[in-house]
Amino acid sequence: MALTQMKAGTSNILVVGIGGQGVMTATEILAEAAIALGQDAKKTEVAGMAQRGGVVSSHLRFGPRVLSPQIAPGDADVLLAFEAAEGLRWRHMLRAGALALVNDSRFVPPVVELGLFDYPADPVGEMRAASTPVVAFDATRIALDLGDIRLGNTVMLGAIADHLPFAAEDLLACVLRRFARKGEAVVALNRQAFAAGRAAVGEAAAVLA
Image 1: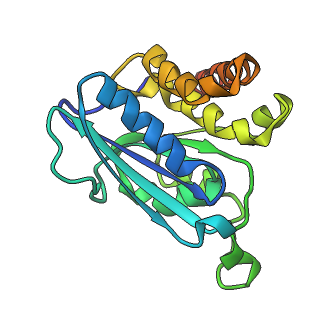
Image 2: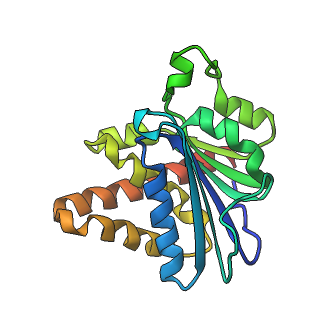
């Protein structure tokens, strides 16, 4: 699958998931990378009981000049979904032909456990049936294989690294700066997680090509 090219000017990234997965932190790091390269960046978050596992969405817009952080439906260039059902719920935000990068691990939010909503049987399949270009991979399994589920955030940043209008190395530098004070071992693990996320998306996209 070829990389969906962003429109010239402002880039619109929508990051969604469940509280505790690092959605807001990932958006902050993406914004930092854009700002470090001289871009104007605006972001906004909506968290529903985020600390208790509620749903979280974060809008990021960056470019030469950005007036509003809000992405309009049908304008997102990339949907980065830390959780598959949330990816399905937000797919309407993508512009035609734009890409969804989806962690296909299942995280059930409290609204489902309380019986208020049904969890879809196959959220990735439903997205594809609706003609949404989707690259799905198990970011959670990758993080666990590296020894820490918290690395899932960095895996997801690696996943989007080749789908941005700047070099993956620029994003990686911002990721590693976040962990520099925690020592070389933590930095090395996050470097591995970032590389694993990039590789997973590359392999999944090749299968779909």
